[in-house]
Length: 467
Image (cartoon, rainbow, N blue to C red; front, top):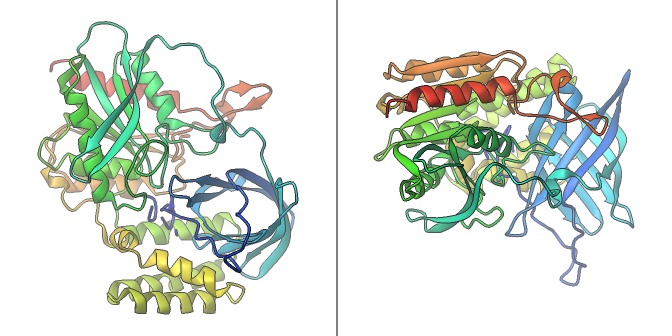
């Protein structure tokens, strides 16, 4: 759950959450807004050098946009971004980074020319749409894999919506062990696509080639799946349960060897599902959270501002203001009043912020899902888990602290069959050190850590061999 729903990746994810586009038109006769789907990149000039800024905008089925900000050189990824359109101007605002970009779309729709603002600093910035970005175009033809692929659909009866995905089954008669893959925070497709990296697709391929069936599906409101995008962690448990129930209907799969593998917030969803009736046979959490949402949001904001080279005194002031906002949200149950107070605080903290953007950000922060996120304690019910659990973290994770989150989860569980591993050089997306990425067409491309993949496979085989 990365601040409300990567942000948002919600105040990682306004803040590892779901950010959406609320168009605002000057008049009823305003023209249709331009299509913004894609990756947008540009050089942000700073004293002593420059940083590449990357925005990702994905249009959802309801017409809204999911948007994130990356600063690859600073290892900052998936910061939540709100998007506001006014004619040919686009405002991209990241409350998590305390920064915003206001740009005007070029006539050919390929560039946004404008200004980047952060505390005490403003500079011109041009971002360019990346043509043919792998995450936003149809996949290239590939060789048929040595296993069966089946487009499937199943229904979440509890929530009343259908989910669509892909079931991959190893060659042979079976029955095989199987897992349901659960994505990190934010609306994601069945491959968990972030930019040009698809971690769930890569992991699913790896496991299926080695004898483990895999179900991965489009999140609510994404791709071919129905339902509302804006959902809490506990809401998503029923999606995981629906996936498990679907696997239980398949004769090729071993009824007693069905597990959940969740990344980030998906790991918390998997752990919660293991506390419910009809639990999975095992759970693997890839960087799940162990602390409350408020603690995570504040830690992530502080780390993000440090990575963006904000002075220490300004960071301390921003974190203190954020704590005050969280206190207002907790102590003000009336949403209208809470939104008005938070919007006023946002505008006083950033004089360049217009009222519409402040109101949109405040509305997100007082929404039911964000209120839930702030108070959600991932460790509260974990003492009910009886199935085997693997907690896997990357030592190079800059999104969360692997040690205190893993410790909180492990201490909360009474279950003795809990394995915790921390992998050197692996980040939150479970990518290895960039120096080891494969070179394709002369450029390095991210991959899922081979060490992590094998650790997952070996642990599953160990815990299903006797069942």
